[in-house]
Length: 238
Image 1 (cartoon, helix red, strand yellow):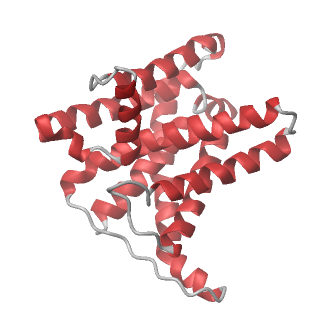
Image 2 (tube, helix red, strand yellow):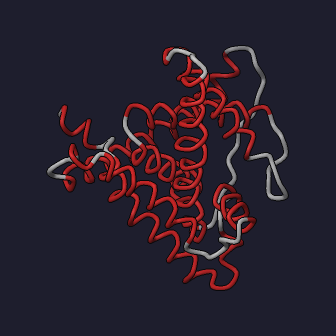
Image 3 (cartoon, rainbow, N blue to C red):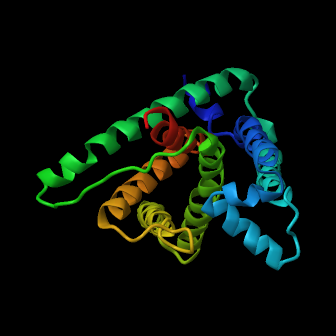
């Protein structure tokens, strides 16, 4: 069990776990959307591609290649301690992703009553989505975790440690800041939702949940749980 817990956090195993998800997302968008595939991309993916276009790197494959390239570089850095049996870890990661997605879904179903019990009157509803948008949910799991957990949270932790803040303070501060940014991002831009307190509070909690998975269970499981939750809410039980 100890070796499995370490294996799921290794970048090489995360690379192998994300590779089919990225292939399914990018290939599926091209097959379904064709020249209009950009309309199906989620916000974090669209933002990343917009920034890349500013630097003249607007090819459709640049964004996924950057993500996979970073994981490969990270894997090379950790190559000496890579797991000997990644296949077993991959099956376990898939199971954990579904498990944690269900945990967050169950919490979301009871979120309204919990908040009401605290004396805060909020309402929480979820928009249904057609089955074709399952690709968008996979993309959200991949690129929102890249942006908010791997990039923002990880970058903030490093920055806070550089300025001398101890890890016991840097981790929660970075986690809370990244979770707030994750929640706020859903209300930004032309496709953002109108600001609502219940949505914002729940997504902040969800951001903290995904950050905890990223820290304790690894990047791959955070991506899998995020995508699984979005699919569960938007397609399976809608």
